Image 1 (cartoon, rainbow, N blue to C red):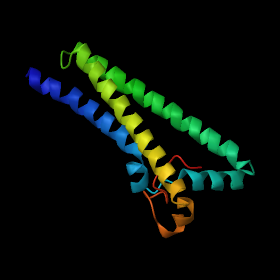
Image 2 (image 1 turned 180 degrees about the vertical axis):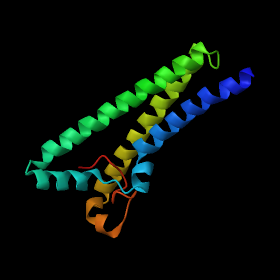
Image 3 (image 1 turned 45 degrees about the horizontal axis):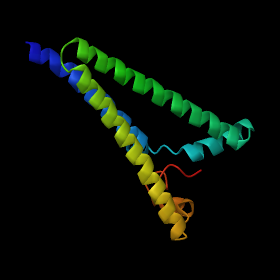
Image 4 (image 1 turned 90 degrees about the vertical axis):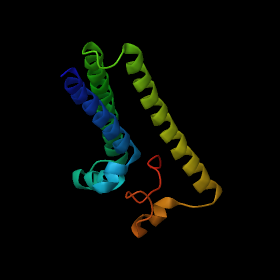
Length: 143
């Protein structure tokens, strides 16, 4: 019976980590056709507001959501520790791995941007051709 109780917290933690990973890499965004740059342009136009202000607000919202997700993951892991599903040391290893993967994604984005610059490629010009990760870019770092 204890094993059945352990499955749910582990599944929730796994889903939360996978969801955060997929969202931050753009996989889920690409699936649903989310294009923040286009959204910012459209909002700025409709509200007659400077696009940079809209982009900054959207970025702050993204950061806030990311922080909330990270706090929820930590809370879920705390519960798993309390329930005896994992140890505090294992919780820290999960959090460390999650951070490592996030840093690696950022490094990959930087490498891609540098590669584009070195090769004189402006991926934003390929947006209308559907080139990239569904957002018309191979990375999200460009604005």
